Length: 189
Image (cartoon, rainbow, N blue to C red; front, side, top):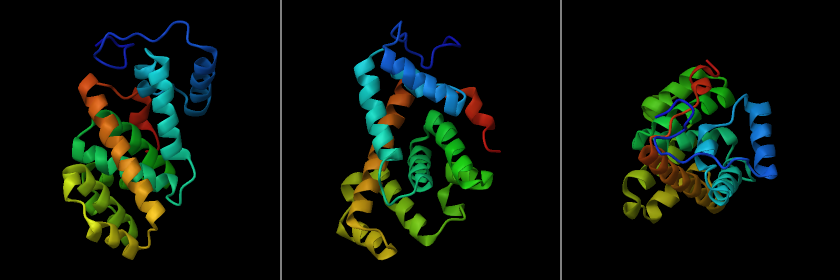
């Protein structure tokens, strides 16, 4: 893969980028110090990029009783099961940043069972992992366990949606050999 390509596929970004896309990339550069490679990877097709970004922004930044940290924790636990290099690096960095705890990010990447998290968060990750490993085996008892831990039905929908999204993106990232930006490796350590 060429150094400037975010994946192993020869799908160069639209050039020039549409004005709205360029503004979005400029905001990323300003706020993050980079344009995440996942966005660059989708930029060969602006409609696909817009659909991806809209879903990501809604699930990860939109209104939810789940904190941003909890949503990132789900992303990492799911990505750990799927061994998605891109998402483990990028979302592990987000967990470190949001939690202020580099050990939490590492524990979630390696094995969330050893992470110092609340019982409620453990129930959330147990559900997300079961959904990842054996979605057809999720049953009412699994949803009830979340309710018993203090989650609402809306929260359960959000947990399932974030887990489902990362199962999809993990497969796209692995299938295209998507590489994380180098900057993620050193963030919040």
